[in-house]
Structure formats: structure tokens, C-alpha cells
Length: 158
Image 1 (cartoon, helix red, strand yellow):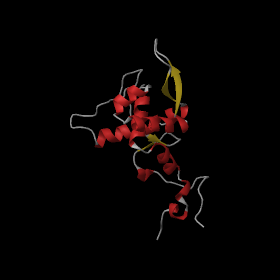
Image 2 (cartoon, helix red, strand yellow):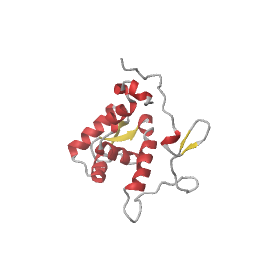
Image 3 (cartoon, helix red, strand yellow):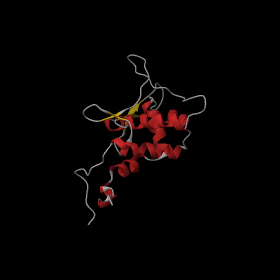
Image 4 (cartoon, helix red, strand yellow):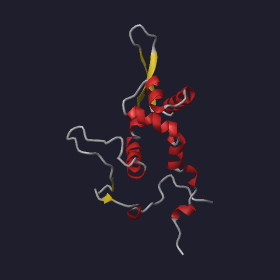
């Protein structure tokens, strides 16, 4: 009887678990959604996410602490200085994750009249979608076409 190689390895250093520990909460995803849509200011994020003030403040602080956002000073004429929140390279690297969630939501959670947002390519106007591909360029259409193998950080269970 065969079993998955994963059963012989310790899941404690799982990078999926580590990523979920950083971003895996509703308010965090909504803040990131807004940041990807160009929303940078606290009041605008609060209005668009409907997050309680303290919750939003906490999520923004966490995202800054984790290096996904950085705070930049701005000052409108006649007003005091404030901060806005901008994506870092590390934060922008989550775009594929956000688009994957969007596509899944469009397929399984959209209203009957369709999704509220359609992503299009700025240069040609065609719809954008994600595809999983191997290094040789073969499109992978199903998890059944993927073989997980132990990576360099895998640790065998003693």
C-alpha cells in the first residue's frame, strides 16, 4: 500500500501555513484588495472595507511590520501630515494570490448577474486570467497533473 511522501515529513515548517499566518484573515485580504486597487489612505480604506477603525489600524500595522506595505507621509494643503500605505515588492508579489482568489470567487461565489470586477490587460483590453504552467511552458489544468516532492527545507519526522 502506498502513501503520500508528505506523511513522512514534518508539516511544522510549511510555507502555506506561514503565508496564512501573515495574510490569512478576512480584513487583511480586504486591505490588500484596496491597496491593489490604488487605495492608499486610511479613511478611504475604512470606507471601502467597512472595517472598524481599530481593526483596520491593526491590520495596516501588521502589513507594515511584515513588509507588505510601507507608510509614506503626505500632507494636503492646510492639513496636518498623515500617512498613506503603499505596497512593497513583497506585497505586490501577492497579486497572483489575489487574482487566483478573485477567479475562484468569480466561479463559485459571484452573484447570478456575474462578477463585480473584470480584469483586463491595459495594453490590449483583453480579459486577464491565471494559468499554472511548468518551466517548459506546459499548462497544468488540474492538481492531478502535479507531483509534489520534498524540497530543500523538508524535514523528515524522526
